[in-house]
Length: 336
Ligand code: KG4
Image (cartoon, rainbow, N blue to C red):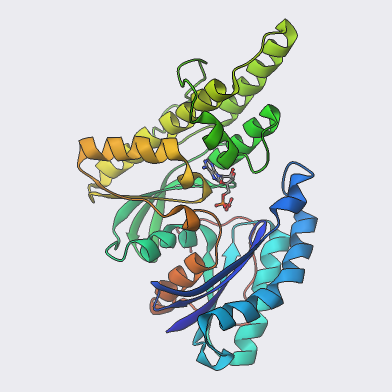
């Protein structure tokens, strides 16, 4: 079954063709990062306009790259929540029109479920149930993936997402936007014990997380150093910062996995590209005996293939919609 899939929830317009949920026939992305870099963050209005400009051409290219024509498409999938509402609407309306014109089913896909499904493309042996840490620019969740379309949030951030924390810290350090990649590279030669940064916990909710205090601590460190005229060591600060993020995320996902006992852990979302988090999880899984599934770096960020993959399993579960499909800025991953 060939699914034409659309993703436009933030600052990447992405279209892919995926066969039977696991085989990527094409996967094209138009990134808007250069445009938003000027402002140091995503400007929602610009994001929506750029999606409108890119989506038609990308859909044509996705078909050409797959060596298919419109007649070979069996269904259309689209990421319909959560995200920047104007941006999500572009993909939803475009996908609706394509499904209607081709007279094929339309499949709504929750963006986070898509990130989780990136692992199905990379690991053909991975099947639910498993525990998944989903960390991106807008969301940080620990999800109990009971089945392909049956999930429950076990823990979540109470404030900022981990990716947002990376982006804000990188902005004050002046190392670029989005900040996760540059921070990861800067940290390579750093001493992770040089700066003391907080590892927050939420009273009574051991799997919940908070990143706003860490963000403020980095800001305060920079301001204090500036006032005293003391130079800060960039690589050491980046390494200490990454260690703090990893120390918040990794023990929680390990605890969630222990509670469920599936023996399988996966990670997903842009922040799952982080080398420190990947390394710490590998070490923790060696001790616990859990099997760890890491997505390749190319599938960590937003892409269309992950939507096509999850779309297949949503279709099998009967989750298709008509032209009434709406876009949502927020939505529980458990609701789908
Ligand atoms: O999943 P994604 O592409 O978009 C959303 O759905 O939000 O995630 C983007 C986030 C950004 O905050 C970016 O800084 C972060 O992923 N990111 C990283 C790394 N690469 C990207 N964070 C930490 N380490 C990285 N290597």
